[in-house]
Every structure is written in structure tokens, then in C-alpha cells.
Length: 357
Image: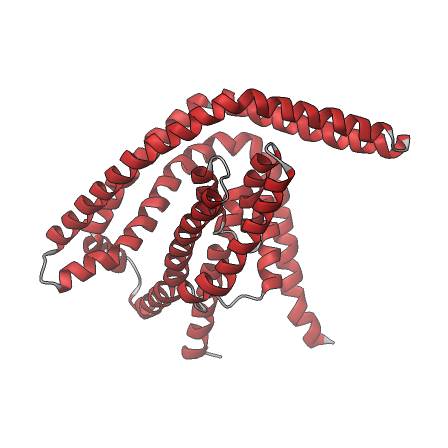
């Protein structure tokens, strides 16, 4: 009995402490939100710069193995990336302009289709029992109010969006200096780490590079492959806006399990404004894309880079979606992997370092 109390009492105290911190944080959120927004505005570009710098390091190391200096290797990588980005924008901007003009041309037809849906839903609700009809009408009304609120927030946040555009425009420059001065930054960090912790930090960094790096690179390559394949399939079935819809499918593919479903919803919405047969074609295309991604692309590109049970991933997605919305869905699995590796590192250290009694 005493052993059970000693085992579970600290855990219970920790849980109660976390709940208390959460309650205090929720109470003070309205006061600290402006400060948090300013910090977030600075942290996000830095995190993106670190991510891009990390992804570019293999290219820099490859050029350095080919007898290029660090400065020359970094310069070559960024010049090539700038040229590739310019070529892509030169092709994408006209393509998106054509898709946008097509959307504006057919916007009245889309609005007429939405109006027909409203009449059909109203007729369907009128034929149902009144309690059920009222509940469904309240649910639809709440969705409409949420959409209107999001639209108003979007229009009201133009000034805030300009701040984000300026902040994100600094990412390429921050990435360049992070890659160029990575050795100086590494030495600065290592000089401020206690001597008895350096071995643990180096081991943890190597573990993060092996597991988390493989996961991130694999996810990006997999998303790019899914985007290209989705565009080809949607273009083949003659679905309008195949390019942006294919890109959405690729972007949302980074979310495990739920991503393909979320990414397919815009394509189904567009197909529903055309015909029922097009909806069937899009469903079949989404199913085919998912099968190719699950059984061909994912095993080939990703391998077994993630060792998390599917039930745990689903729970993480619920938590991430509740805490951070779409960004939470994307980041929750990598964050969980990082926390797990840090905890494993401390456990290994406890086993290696004897505790004086």
C-alpha cells in the first residue's frame, strides 16, 4: 500500500498542478494575449528559418565534400534555390491567374448552386418532425454564424496580416545566416552548456537528427509527391482548379490520417457544383490517391521513421487540433517525438550516472 502511495501520489500532485496552471493561464489569457501575439510573431519566423536551414544542410554538406568552401557552398545553394523559385513562380502565377479568372467567371453559377442547396435543405427539413428539424436548423445556423465570424475576423485582421507578411519575408535572410554561421552558433551554444551535460546534449542532437530529421524530410517529400500526383489525377478527370486543389491535398497530407480527408473536401465541394458524376469521379480519385500514398509512396519515401501507435497518433491529433487548430494538427506529432526523445535522454542519463545514497 505504501509503495502504491509513493508511486501515484507524486503523479497525482503533478496532474493537479498542471490543471491549476491551466486554469490560471485561461483566466489570465485575455491579459497576456497581446504579449503572446508579439512573441509568436517573432518565434514563428525563427522556427521556420531553423527548419529551412536544417533541410538545406545536406546540400551544403554535399558541396563541401566536393571541395567547396562553406561560404561558396551556401552561396551556390541559395543561388540555385532562388533560380528554381523564380522559375516556379513564373509558371505558377499565370496558372493561378487563369484558375482565379475561371473561378470569378463561374462564381454566379456557384452561388446559384448554393442557393439551390439551401432550398433543397429547407424542403427536406420541412418534411421532418419539428424537434429534429429545429435541432438541425440550429446546427446549420451555428455553422453559418461561425463562417461569418471567421470572415469578419479575416477582414478585420488585414493590418495583422501585413505584420505577418513582413515577418515571414525575413525568413529567407534568417535562413541564409543560420546556414552560413551554423558553426559559430553551435560553438556558442556548446560553450554555455555545463561540461557534464555536453555528452548528453550531443547524443540527444544526434538522435533528433536521425529520427526527427528523417520524419520531417520524408513528410515534405511525401507531400510534394502527393501534390504532383493529385494534380495529375484531378487534371485527368477535368476537374476545375486542379492545380490549387492538388496543392491543398499535398499540404494537408502532412496531417496523419485526417489530412487526406480534409484535403479532399474542397475538391468534393467544387465537384458538387458540377454534377453528381463528377462527385463520384472525385471520390474515386481521392480513394486512389490515398491508396497510392499509403501503399506505394509512403513506404518508399518514409519507411519506418515513426514508431507511434495509431491510437496514440489519433489522441495527439485531437489534442493538437483543440489547442492549436490546423497548426496544432501539423505540429503535434513532431513535438511529441521531440518530448519523447528528451525524456528518453534524461532516463538514459539517470541510468549512467549513479545516485549517491
